[in-house]
Image 1 (cartoon, one colour):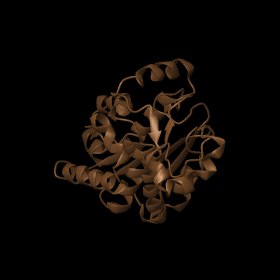
Image 2 (cartoon, rainbow, N blue to C red; image 1 turned 135 degrees about the vertical axis):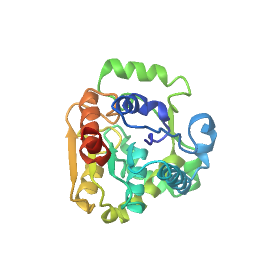
Image 3 (tube, rainbow, N blue to C red; image 1 turned 60 degrees about the vertical axis):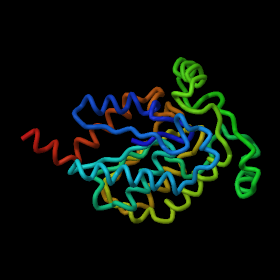
Image 4 (cartoon, helix red, strand yellow; image 1 turned 135 degrees about the horizontal axis):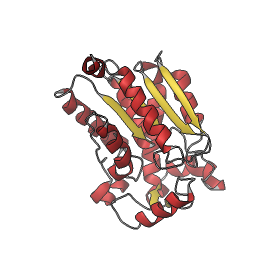
Length: 254
């Protein structure tokens, strides 16, 4: 499981625990430039993210016959990359709030200038602050997340523009190779995602080569679908997807 941009494995914890409680082994990793090494977010490259994710996947291949990959935001894009590179080995992909574009309604009016700024040294000096609604439509959960962000455990309280740059570089590479994805895939995206519109999810769904694919558009959530009003639905759909495509589970039931 891969977390989102400027996040941490903490944001995947409840989801991972749910999957683990249903008899799957779960591995949540902390991406380079995140966690205790937040200063590295200003120098980390998207190539480091994909090398890290590939290495972790290669390690798991030594232990397991079946592997599913799942991710949120940046983590979803990394999961798609792995689906392109290891298309014959990955049992299934769960892509949540896939962020191929930064076009959500929360971004400021001048966001159309972002591609220009990202190509200049300016990206190393500007950060976009994490702010209301913190990716969550549920007001009670939103208040909790706002409080949690005062610690480093859950993630950063801002988005460095250089990190946006690396995410979009990764997204551009993934977009060029979507047709290489053949694994079964579950794509979940909120209609009102505040960071990235459903355009990203729709593009993935239309361009991958998977014949077994499902796109779900949530009606009562924002970007953080694992913590919002429809989280139980997302958890259950993900588990159902894994159970459906796991031959190991079929053997256990026999």
